[in-house]
Length: 183
Image (cartoon, rainbow, N blue to C red):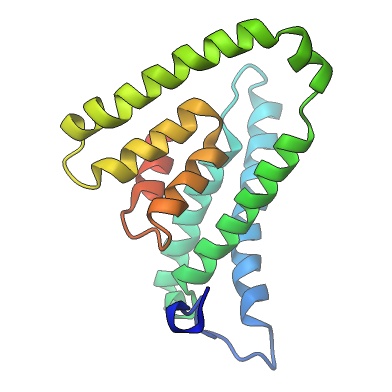
């Protein structure tokens, strides 16, 4: 990025002498993720037949942590831009590991059905993006549509990457909305 177009990633909300601001924000994210895994484990122990997505639990834990930080008047020490960048970094790793785990032999064996299904799926997703999204969503129709396009053509991490391309600062609120809708 040329120097004139560079943006600030975040602010130092805590004193780096006590804890690095990035570490502070990473700890907040990890608290939510860890709590979600703990809750998932406890639910599976009590009710083995019930499965709740850990992503949804982490989102709920994040909302609860945000409420607690507001209650304690510590929310001013959290920079949403830094939290967003941590989430974007995790998505980058998720995509890289997903691509690395593809079994090439399986792809070669089933290449014809994969290509046919991919072509039909892509056509459906393009029609949804440009026709249904435009009519269905009142605000940020393209951002919401491209997120659904990414999710439909891959996984949620692809949806986040496509959303990041069209909304790099996540100002549309699509990611938060989809997180709540997904639960």
